[in-house]
Image (cartoon, rainbow, N blue to C red):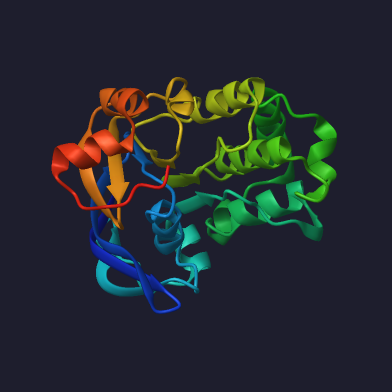
Length: 256
């Protein structure tokens, strides 16, 4: 079993504090969903976990299997087993999808266990079929000219190919129609295992209708204020964030 432990995490960007003491433990085999109003720090948390240089950790730790990764560079965290599916993936001209994914896979393997071209192609074909992606997408430049839905499917394809210990999905459902949402969910559900954990950041219950979370956390004003099981997200859909805020007696403006 692997574990991510986030301890009293405070994060600032351009000297403005966004995260104000986040505590969270995720074990492999679990799916955690974080929901919250706009501007409350959800995406900041995802970027901080992966080590985006614009986000400064001013207090606290991020532990992966007991090892402090807080000072690690992004590529070191990726090789250690973390993966971030971004809300707005970048376009990279000159590097094909296939080249990028094989390089990412082999960067985590020692010289005696690099993935062969044939094994890579077999795995790629299988996963692209699950995601209903045409074969030619493998040879297109990374995200170049992709629609929003294609970029999101491509993020899940990379996840299925790389097989990290933990995936952080930052609003992977944003902008997806119902068919694309079902395909993305099928790909993610195909990965569920005791060796793989997920943190989903989302605004909407609709994604959680397809990917049932183990735990749901509500974030407000830079901290997790309430946690529960999957029923908590359904309550949010019925009551909104103001109901949670008022129940907890928080003096917070809600921008939904």
